[in-house]
Image (cartoon, rainbow, N blue to C red; front, side, top):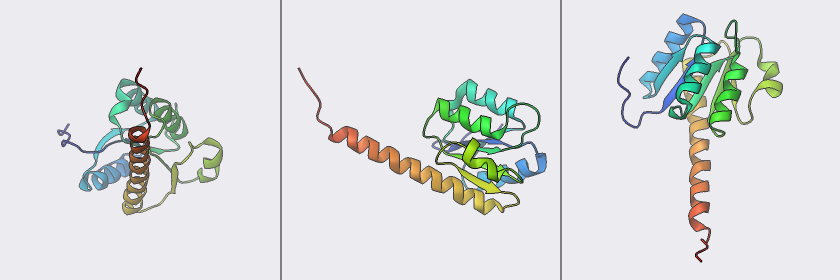
Length: 147
C-alpha cells in the first residue's frame, strides 16, 4: 500500500465492480486524493468501524452485493462523523435517494465520467470546509464565561 501523502484527503471508496473501482481510484489518486478501497459493504463498514475518523469523504456504490448497501455505508459514516461528505453511485437506484440517502449527499447516476465524481467530491469537501470554518469563527467570536 502506498504511503499517504501528508495532508492528503482520505476517501473511502466502496465499489464492488473491480474495473470501475480501479478506474475511480486512479482518477481520484491523480487528483491528489488518498483512496481506501472496499470491494463490498462488509469491508467498507469494517474500515469505518476500525478508524472512520481518518476519512474526509465516502463514495459508495448503492448496490454492493450481499451485506450492507451503499445507503448503509453512508449512514454509518454519518453516525461516526455527522458532516462527512457522502456520494452515492448507482445505475438503477437514484429514485431511492430521498428515502435512503443521508442529507446533503450527492447521487451520481451511472454511467458517469470520473470528472463528475471529482467535481462532486470537491464540491462537498468545499461546502464542509466552509461550514467548518464558519463554525470555528462562531466559536471564536462567542464570549467565554470566566468565573
